[in-house]
Image 1 (cartoon, rainbow, N blue to C red):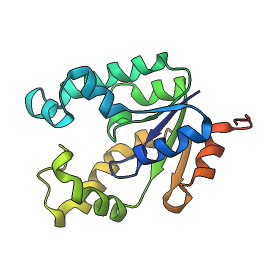
Image 2: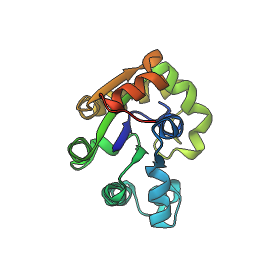
Image 3: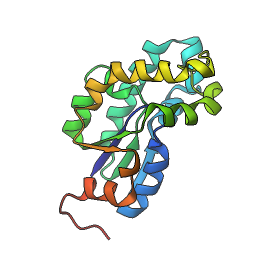
Length: 171
């Protein structure tokens, strides 16, 4: 079983991957952390020295290497579904779940972490909601291809388990 958590930065993909994996008795990985290991650089350093295209190519390469895992929850990067054929590939290779939080929630979560997020590092706090709304508008067509979509308060352990198990029994 491969579960791909997708959505905008700040939706809590890593948080929910960490919660969901033990409930299913499987492991979890953060795609950005795996890219950092593969490139031997932080995401910020990759963006600064190699650029976003290099990052996206490395991200795709690492994503597809994760297909070797039999049972894993993968917290993807916010842009992962919007590049190459990543969304189609994830749908073909596992269960995709779009974690969809309101832009106001995303902004509140992202602003304190700006220095660690290359795409928003230079965005003024007062412009963050507009920036995130525009980015979401660009990516929504990819996110909407997910097998499941959970919004705001719907994002719970129980709802995630229901998306993942689809009639299967896990202890």
